[in-house]
Image (cartoon, rainbow, N blue to C red; front, side):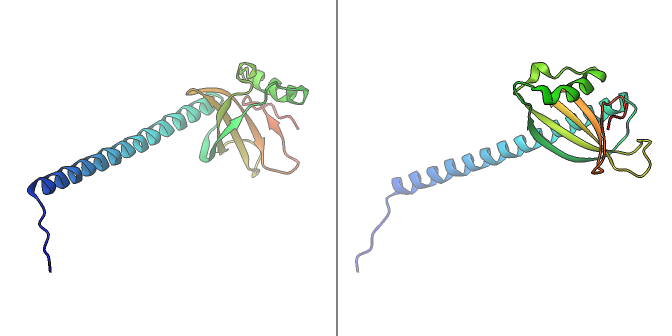
Length: 153
């Protein structure tokens, strides 16, 4: 039976290759951790911004219900006239954001004076800025209103 011997150069090359692969894996894992940490930090920053905005309007957010991407229509048609008017009541103008994909944060509101109804606040964010928002009832025959709280059925 013939025995093959591995040259010292081959062993060194293999060790160097293994070291390089290990270093690359460590670097990649570190980058992944940094990206995750950055995402968590950004989400916390945006959550604080949303809660601060709701507080300015007098609303207390009890919990974040969902966070999702939402594409605004381009152009805003006549069916959006009421929605755009609600935004303007609260000091927002969505028209420059037509066609943009924004973040929508939805919160349950704890202090709306509608009794036991579940009330949600939707806030729209673009580049770390609140650009719009509204309040809505979870009832089937519910309402949609501006963040100022003037109820519209």
